[in-house]
Amino acid sequence: MTDPLNASLENKSGYDGPDSPYSVGWTRPKKVILADRDNPLPLDCGSNFYPVTVEYETYGALNKAKDNAIFIIHALSGDAHAAGWDADWEKDNRPWRGDRPGWWDQMIGPGKAFDTSRYYVVCANILGSCYGTTGPWENGPRSGKPYALDFPVVTVEDSVRLQVRLQDYLGIKQLRAVAGGSLGGQQALAWAINYPDRIRSAIILAASARLGAQGLAFNAVGRQAIMNDPCFQGGSYYGSKPPASGLEVARMLGHITYLSNSSMEGKFGRRFQNGSRPCYRLNSEFSVESYLEHQGRSFVQRFDANSYLYLTRAMDYFDAAGAVGGDLASACSAIQARLLLIAYSSDWLYPSKDTRAIAKAMLANEQPVSFIEIPSGYGHDAFLLESEQTTPLLESFLKKV
Image (cartoon, rainbow, N blue to C red):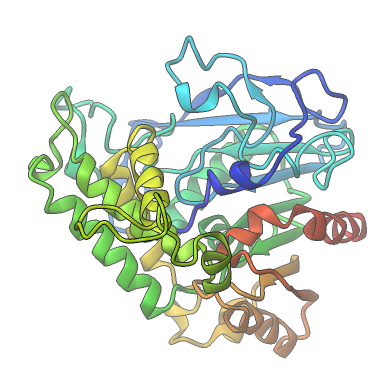
């Protein structure tokens, strides 16, 4: 629901080509098995899960001290391809990645906010997704068929637990920073709370300690749209027609949450697609309808419906203070990292006041934290679109860590 993957590309021109000195260039994903029969991954649902494969990408070089690593965490429908240009998109049947750079390319690269001439940047696909890390689309070892809804329900904390294993695999004792927006921001906060000695700082954008009731409601309706699609087949649609209509509606609904009222009015208003008068029909007539339908159709081509169900539920479950009765200051008391919290003025999905609540909790414990609200009309999309305002904040923060 809260990952405007395409939005930044629609609104951003002049991306650095793969041969630009400001680009990380051509990239190739890597894979590693981080959980097996002898070392399963313990999940919050009680399952000891295996096997688990993780897809990840790295940019820049790890220094001799191994103290310059930054872990980037993507949002809902993102993937490990955070920067550069995918060299294997044709061979690996990745058509959605062939003609565009990584989803945060404007922030990662030489001379950018996450300067790859200085830092070693890692981005991994999260557990339950459909872009290389084990998820419901993958064949289970016992049945030889896709897990579908037999895949265990996963949480934000489960994904972070897996990321910690990747950290160990890469031989990094302590990260310079973890950074992410939206669902990625939730994971960054979970890192800071649950693994305080493994990170020196956390950068949390457009996220809060938990999703509000309105966000839960949008997620619930999106999941119902998928599960009520006649092609859903109880999640076992692999090898047949997928629940495209349900996933399209879920994405349309989710996309509304990315935008602010002012951005929607400015971009669409009440304009008709053709002419200035209504045609008196029930199908799509307004420009905003056409836009949402396009977003839904394009999403169906690149994302798995079951993954959407699992990842929105993981977002729902996250409650940083849930284990301590809602006392956020108590939940944050274990944090040793310096935090940078960035909110955006028109984001109503993760409103500024909810991000500010994390800062207040840190201050109550006399812990180092910086909170900034960036004025923006983009709504939740802003964490990917406001790179010019965000970049100097990140550069300054990282130099102090």
